[in-house]
Length: 515
Image (cartoon, rainbow, N blue to C red; front, side):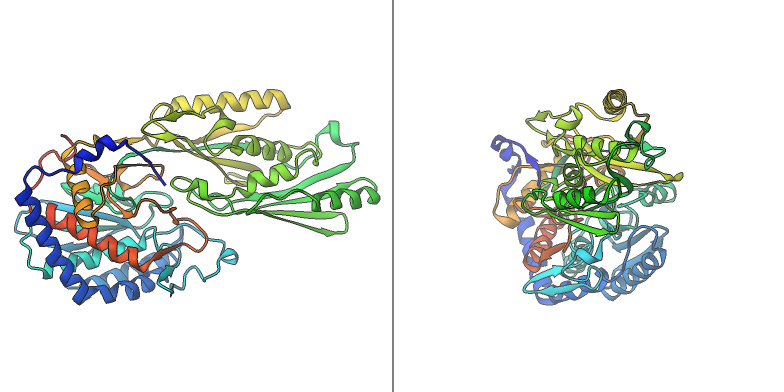
């Protein structure tokens, strides 16, 4: 899931004051005891409830319903709940004038293709110790874990030095207006833990970029190919969003030429070699043929290796079988760009000993937003600090210009390149404290992580991603049949309580992200 530091950095988990560490662990043990007796049985039922809100982009009714649920559930746990527009605050008050420790999650989710799921994605299902549903791991599981951890910490009687405030955002997976609008009218917490990534702590987040390529007249067969025999593409569609490896890509074709040639062409398509974990269907109706490539969805930032890119496979299956058109060339560019998930197709196949490699997802081909007759390819890139932002945009535009010249095309570049990488010193106070908490709670000494998934840590001052996914397992967020084990849900609460028993009940940390 992540690239990790060398073992030499394990020394950062040491705490110089052994007595203090023992005291902290004892407070955490008391809180865990309360959790087990009073709250652990609530975890799965609450998670199943919140999974049933279809909080995808644009569904304001589901967002409102979920925010109402947060108020009811939070107040049912005797926590303070306040609406703050796109953000909901769920608070465990501290002493008067105490600084605020933020816990930050998002309540919105990525879209789904429900036909691909074994379990209904918005029903919330627990089976054989596993919870299934969109958001189970990303990010509704952490939402429920945090609420119950706050209640358990309060009931343990630990004297808090911070007000602990859970911030639940509502459009992290799309427009990302929630935290920006919140900070216009509310003060940021003095420090925050973003519960939307990996344990033991994330000390680097790659830059999120999207390179778009638009074809203005996709389906007109080029003059040089109009007298040739073959398939003309009449429709091309792939993927759901930029951050999901596309699990389905569809091309609708129309045969231009004698019917006997069509029979041979269709048979050849049906005999296409299909790699393991992919499927290809070919359906014919008269002279029209629909080719559908199936792969496997995955999070393009933290589990791109677990995906199987249907768009790239479709391009490979149709290679040299299409009459020249902008749609055919756009599919070719997608295939070349996405043939290597770490950037060889775009000339950025570099590896950093700390940050690992670039992640490249040829993600979607959809009608252009400002012109439904045009087609836009979106390529999601999780970029290293070495090349991101404007220099990365310029590099990609040069690659496209070379493709345009070679194929006599006029594709238009665009995209988003404003998201920077996020870099922390692993020897800073807060990362060291969090690593120590993880080690005490689990008995494991695990190096800090680098993540390809961007979080709210990029939008809130003095914030860092801390869990709630355990290392060593592929991250299922954005996947088909998104899931998390009940065991890991409870284990995550254990780790969070260890951190809260330390930071939330100790002297406030000054300059937490400095050594």
